[in-house]
Length: 212
Image 1 (cartoon, one colour):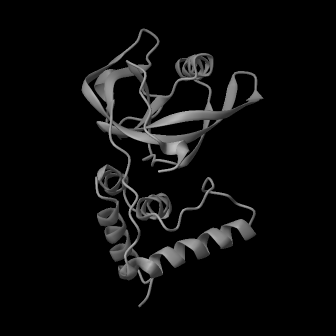
Image 2 (cartoon, one colour):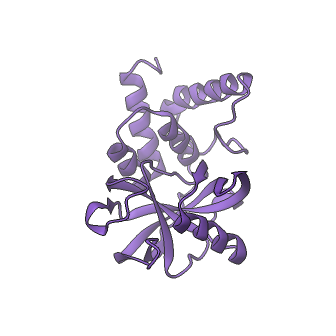
């Protein structure tokens, strides 16, 4: 894995940001933050240089405060804050990078301000594996998608682009594919990056995105 995604110790307890999305390692995440509990979280992370955890919601939404109305996945991805801009008074635009996956240890709890926290342990990063010959069309298709997005002056992925890494290719495709969050979650949790890429390859071929 790149230095950006190398496993690093997690704060204990780990502060959580439940979202209606699945964050993948090395993904770019842009958040618009205005709730006091999350403004405090950003301030704490900036002061300490620590990370926070992004977990996908199964019930509720980002602003739900009642514990009985919120449920989220037990596996998430740590996020590092890279840049913060003040859009206007009380609203921050925060750019983050996904780091390593983690697994919650035991039930999460809420602080007095409503911020979720939990004990958590790091999950090992994907081992670097080369895409097999059967996956080369899927790799080429991602490279072409990146080129087209660059022409439109869009940069959905952080550099470097590692098209020789099965896990990196699979994760970037998972960000792009219009599949249910539950499916993305299962893909993110898979320990074997080649299997993850194989599933993505099968989906792309089924949808005629990749031929041959």
